[in-house]
Structure formats: C-alpha cells, structure tokens
Length: 165
Image (cartoon, rainbow, N blue to C red; front, side, top):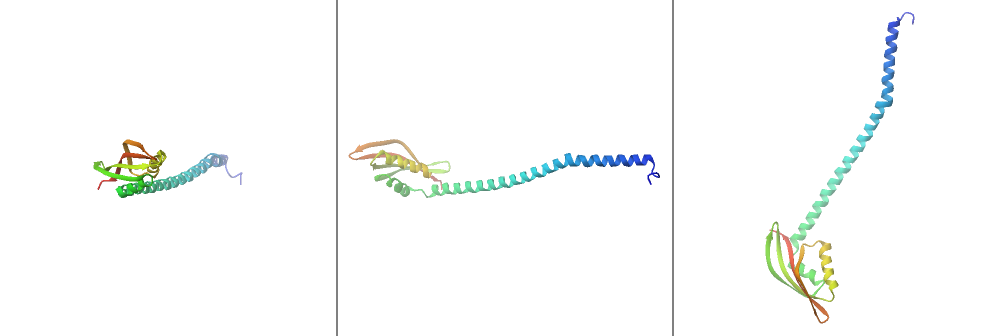
C-alpha cells in the first residue's frame, strides 16, 4: 500500500500529523495550564464576590440597627429619664428647664442640674456612663463643685438632644 501512495501525499500527511502533534503538545503544556489557572482564578473570584456580598449585606444591616438604636434613644430620652440617670449618681437632684432650640434635625433641650455627690469619682462615673451608653447628652460649662460638710454640691448645664418633630 505504501508503494501506491506517492511521496508528495505522504509528505503532506506527515506534515499534517506533525502540525497536529505540535498543536496537541502546545495545548497540553501551555493552553491547559492557562485554562486550569483561569478556572481556579474564576472560582476564587466567585467566592470573593459572594463573601463581599455577604459583608455588604451584614454591614448595611448593622448600620440600620445602629441608626435605629440611636434614633430610638433620641426619640425617647426625656427629662424624667435624665433625672433618673442623674439620681443614680447624685443625691437631692434638681433639674431646671432653661430652654429649647433647633439645630438642624435636632431639638436641643438645655437644663441646669444641681445635686450632691460624696466623691468626685461619682461625677466621673456619671460622665463615663453617659459616654459608654452613647446617650444623646452633652455636659456644658461651667461645672461648679463646692464642698458642704461631707458632700460636694455639684452644678452644671446639660444639653439633651432629640430628633426634631
């Protein structure tokens, strides 16, 4: 049979076989590695996208919860709650309403507070509680401390922030 096939045709078939062999070798050593690498990278990318999506949803949920928490504090904080907060740290507490003003989206109620504490530590615990719990309260100057017997008479101004309605 080989005798019947001419040499040109045999040479062209050998060249085609050689070309197919070269393409196959290139595919195995070059293209296949890139394909595997692309598959690995695309799977990592899909995983990262799902993680990023989850993180963004969680972040939005936490921000909404924090906003609702602050908003509820701003809505429900009032003079009575302020009085009970001060009464936890001071004796003979009196609060006088000085006025109310609007500042942007907040109504600011200004109060003058007076009371007696045993030690300055009680006053600092009050400040620490206001800070740690994130109450919408600001202490304003002047702060006065006057020793009367065993106790210290304390007076200061407070600003209570509420959402403007």
